[in-house]
Image (tube, rainbow, N blue to C red; front, side):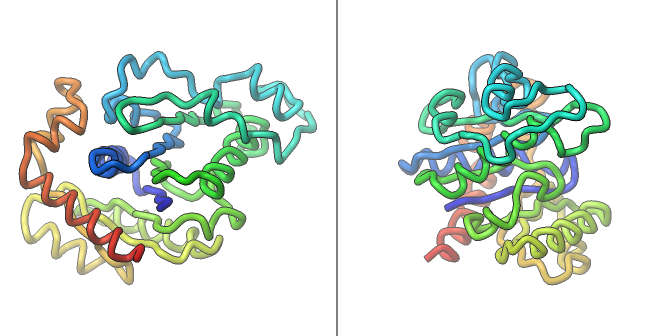
Length: 259
């Protein structure tokens, strides 16, 4: 199963990605987590030691030049749009427990947009991982579908839009749905996060138009304490039985749909 997780900044994309990864890894699945959010934080959430020492692919200048034929940051270069990436997962992936992680990083070259060798290599590697990997793949994305394309749309079984009780979050989810459908992703679902009351959930139900909600996560003091005390999400779930059941419900929905 290949899942892309997206939504407005701050809604809990990384939280959902890490909770799903730990749940599947605990039941014996091999999980490949991909952090493609420019503000990378998935390694810490997954409990990787010294996440600050993990070098994102976008910052591996020598590797980018080797594979694309262009030096990152230079202007007006020609570069390969389909660089060789088949051997990269074994070279750059980190592993902790039953989870492998690849951090893509953000493209920081000012004014270059996505037309740069860093972006070409990232997109090629994501395409390879989605099409060729036999693992459970979870992509923690920024708000959009920038790193996906028509060639990988069929490989994405579900795009999960994480929403919180707020119109900007819901509007972002609707915009993401439109973009995802344009490139051919068929299964766009939502997870409601940071739910403090039934009114919060009803608010999302009222305004989230034509996106199925497959589960919700209540406001959790355990999750809120993660950033304060550097607790990884696995420990938070184990200490919060309600959160544990809510994650299980989301997993069951995805597994049921995948049959």
